[in-house]
Image 1 (cartoon, rainbow, N blue to C red):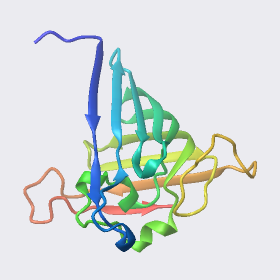
Image 2 (cartoon, helix red, strand yellow):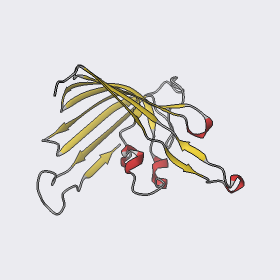
Image 3 (cartoon, rainbow, N blue to C red):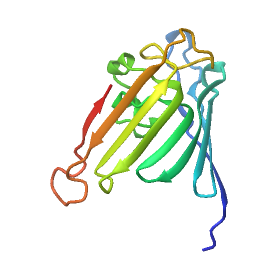
Image 4 (tube, rainbow, N blue to C red):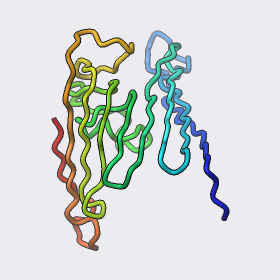
Length: 178
């Protein structure tokens, strides 16, 4: 197969077509309509743009550029999920239950900033550290302006000690985010 220098893979994570309000029984509501636009340029740069058209409004969920220097070092610039709460980092199609837990209201959702991340020890551990504008817990940055002038330092370390073995605990991970 011939490799190309440019690759664009459009995706759509439309979900939650439901009638959740008793006053609008019989009405379809689109809570999340998020077409995903991702591109890779020259093996070193990844880009992602995710608008959300659900709820009758347009919100920019993700918009970032990754510079990939190696598996152990990536630099991300733009708006993305803050690497703090584990459940927030799981994509909507992969959440076990219909709704996320109330604990997700205790951590920031998406924010604008710079992150450094990577995989270490053959994928047995990962890290992410970032300097973000700072948003209230459970919220996303809705504007590009920083309302308080201060920055927030966020980080996450994940260790999967049994990843490369056929141990019964394969997949078990220890996460620390702050």
